Image (tube, rainbow, N blue to C red; front, side, top):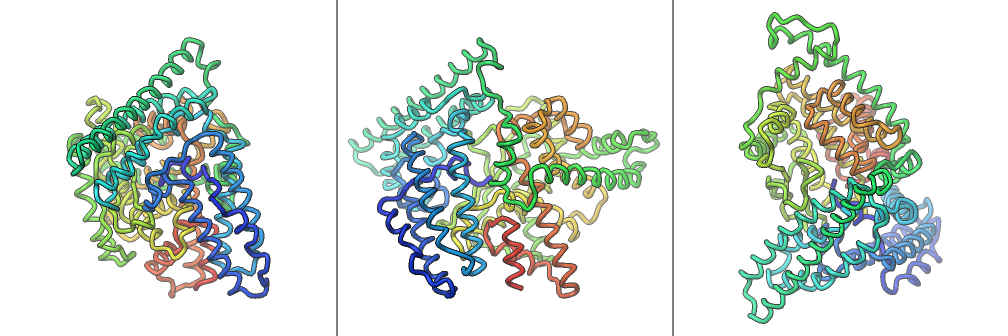
Length: 594
């Protein structure tokens, strides 16, 4: 996940743009593509400028710090301005017809999808009412502390100005909440408790900075009042949680399940696929059956190597599980988990270079770090990438250490991320997965394709990269590596199945556990974490398989068409050159640019 979803949804009207947008395109010549493209480029520039002025948190997330001292309050006035903004720009987009160049037609489609989604999220999805974890000031504060866009005193001045709005920010958050879900309330408490650590870091920075005594005292006072506002919000959520449990969870809390209608619409806006949510669910079921057949074949071949004379169970899934359990005993020690990941990154880089799979810019730093406290609670590993305005800033590979795990939980977790799968995880998150793709995205000629990134393309590329690396010989074609890859690929495949199953088909926790433990061969701890994640998100878990399926199918289609002329490195670099556009749009772009 690149950016918090709410940052993508809160769009607001920029000052003085209404007349400019209404007049855009009124005198265009529909037969003059160059003229239309020139007008559209100017229109995009105005749109982006307005977007950053009214969405300073999102702007900072992509490395644009002009409005770093501003806060976008999550209140009704902001939402109403966002609706006006969305409809205004939708009307303006209609002035541009099919005479645009194909790249600009794609940008137009991405902008339209984003604006239509904004209206739908505000009017119908309304997560601002039931998801308390939407509200957290820590992410932007941490970004401004870490980003080297200005000297520390200047950054602290921006942060101090933002802190003047912390109390109002959380007051708006509390006013928004209407029967939240229990699960999102608990997450809101956890992540805002983690946010308090950012104020500790901020305090240290204020003490170290060359500031006048009165200025330092004023900054510290703002930190204290902001910390109090966060604690007040945590207490508010804790009261909601306690009162709800007394009343009865079924009555007090909204269900985390969003149902078929909302899920289908969210899938259409977020995934932007040629397929519906139900069609992709069925494709995932079919792919799961195919993976089971491949795993069964490998298991028969290497059973004796690992299991000796132990009889094979009659149940194929049980046979596969026993073999995987045995192979999974090979893993790092809990206290070496983060270090092992850090050590593997250079090995992946060397393989990519030696096999000429894609160019990786050595000047773009990648740093493995422990996941900051305010980001924990959803995923054990993730990427925090700089945006297109700050291309040279480091990308952080966030890895949650196992310090707080019991020995039993740590063992279960490490069996899941065993010697083989840990390497596949690093391919997915770092090289050549998210890190590589997002570096390319930042260099896209189209800023729209970078800032309105499609989650299914981003996650799908990472899943595609896992398969492609093994196809090119990573892991020396060891059957154990392929068996574990298929197990890992079952993970992304079953993500779609359980996501749709939970929110649309009302899968129970037991059904999900059976799916993941028996059919996807995951450890019980991992299955439990996935259930939790699916209760906290919707559709996002579909993005992995959906994107992978469409990217892989596109590659194979082009390979068949081009025959011996097909070049894998050229395919990868051309595919990634289009930023983070949806795969369905990239297909068209690659047809237009041989």
